[in-house]
Length: 135
Ligand SMILES: Cc1cc2nc3c(=O)[nH]c(=O)nc-3n(C[C@H](O)[C@H](O)[C@H](O)COP(=O)(O)O)c2cc1C
Image (cartoon, rainbow, N blue to C red; front, side):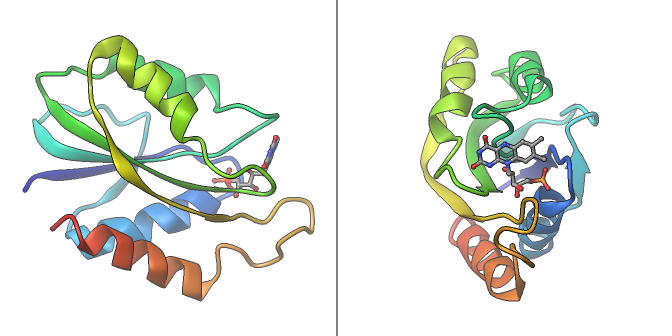
């Protein structure tokens, strides 16, 4: 299996999750500014909610993907209140015809003093366990 891990972060939480996922898969976690040049079977895409939506940069990144180079997308991330960005990311993936795996990883993420320390060590462990099932 060929894997890639990309993330978008504003305060570092998604980067930490991405690093846990990437370490498990034996690849490097990279920001979405780094394009997918080599074909991959699974792209793990880390992202979060900001003001009730995903960041426009995440939308643009998904729109830029080549369906001949990305087999499917696995969503992961955190948020303070909302549960999952899955539907938002899938709406973008659907436009370009890249399937989304129905499994995803989501946990609480610290925001302005709420959920302090999250994702914590347990969340990072759970994220790497999540990634393991795809190997
Ligand atoms: C500008 C901003 C807006 C946010 N808006 C929301 C929101 O609407 N709903 C929510 O559940 N969390 C919201 N959050 C919390 C983030 O989703 C959460 O802190 C997440 O862990 C951030 O990941 P990051 O550190 O990788 O950017 C917001 C965070 C920021 C910085």
